[in-house]
Image (cartoon, rainbow, N blue to C red; front, side):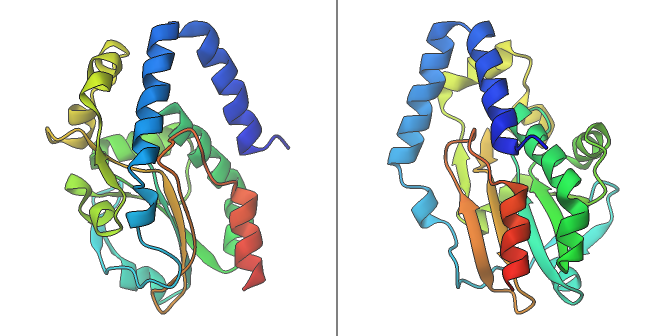
Length: 215
């Protein structure tokens, strides 16, 4: 089975063929700048307790962290939005690994700032069988230290590609979470994390399963 890393590599190859070089260079420069801000170092780490939260799912039903943790270990996947091709690749890969994740005794939950209507569309598009939560205003992502504002230089590029971040998120901030994956034990403590300011980098679902099986 093709890995998520291989799928992303294939997508990057096609993107390089289709996007103007100046746009690719701008995106690369912004990524370097974001990495230099050491945003990852300011996010929650292994051993930290995560904040409690209540968020609506794709159907508008309130879900609580405590409700998940009462039943099992939780895998939290923060993604930018259904407009992001890398997020869709990751969500689809997580769905394929869902049986193994659940067999390892964990509940998989995705979190994004996109509105419930867009979350539902993302869930249906990727045929997801796990909860997708709406983090309005990136409230929870901020408590994890994951949020940054999309740089001004990228906003017209995104708009030109038909990506309306304010429309997807229901606000005007252009704030997004860094893609991140956390494994949280039933005591609410982080036992594993993956955070990268480079949105093209994602954690392999197989690694999530391996970590879960290690106990």
